Image 1 (cartoon, rainbow, N blue to C red):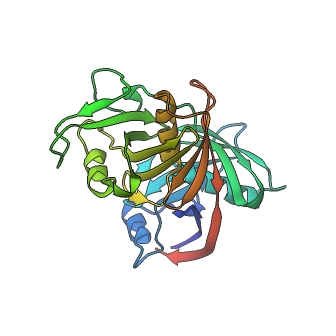
Image 2: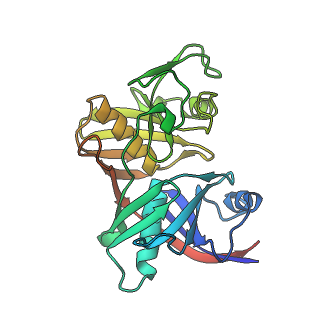
Image 3: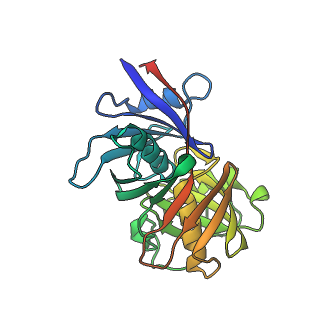
Length: 277
């Protein structure tokens, strides 16, 4: 069976985009395709479908490189919007997209730049889910695997779960050890993404993200939104923040609590191709 796809990325956070109605690989096939030595290589696979609901332009599903399906992907949503707009009649500048975590509005701008809404950040532990007694700004987690002392995190859902840690320097943050330990911590029954946030000013931060089911990626759209949402909640950040990731910069705008959060950044198509499954 032949799978045709576009290989895309947002700041190095890379994807294959394909027609899920035509062919949906199983988890084992996705893991083979994700291998960067023997497959195509990607962080996430994005399956596109015709719209399921009136007033939407398409529906999409997201699969991590480990083959597991997840709820949302910010940079993936931006790439989907760029991909769809280039193929739909009239090349629309705005799209309404349906996803497992709800509706995503997209604005396709010049030069491959795309802005998307990532919904309203939800700090309720049940939204992630996160097994703690009550909501708080910070949670001191004891007995995290490999950690000698408690780990302080904040937690928020951007349609998918995020734990965010404030760090002095992202260059020296223990992403490779603490990221996986928190991803699989028993208090996150559906696992979690883990962001390491360095605040430089109220309008600029640095961020590294260990993505659930993938590992550290060059950029993470929902991770950028989660970091800004936490920073806003703690009174550290303003309504518009430039987020510097290893792969480059995105901008996150969150005017106020109760309003949708917006993610803006570049997209690119590396190539189009096909593979036999």
